[in-house]
Length: 153
Image (cartoon, rainbow, N blue to C red; front, side, top):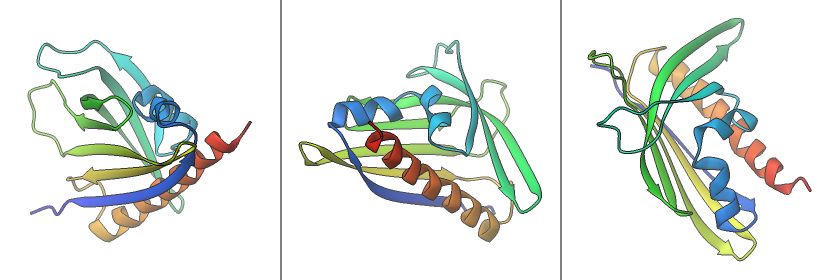
């Protein structure tokens, strides 16, 4: 049985919630601040999709080794300026490991927003401890890059 790996980060980001939310509610914006997300392309949705769909290439390194994975992700929750959830949703009829990205935003004050990002992976790309560390490192760098992106004039 494969045990799910989940990484969560909270970060305080400058700006009104609506502007910060605009950076996280569309996967095509992620490569600018999340290095785990290597490439993203919006694709036509299937009739069963609850929201827009994207082909996403994730790329991670462990020392000299790199792994990449292509996923079809669908936005399954879009609570404007408050929360967004993306979930893996392949349409090839096969069973696939879960990938879920969840983000929630809460005002700290009018010019600061606390963003909580959670990434859950339910497969076996690498063993649990290695994968936990890899995902944790990427999410940590992504959180710092998101803060830097919003603090740049």
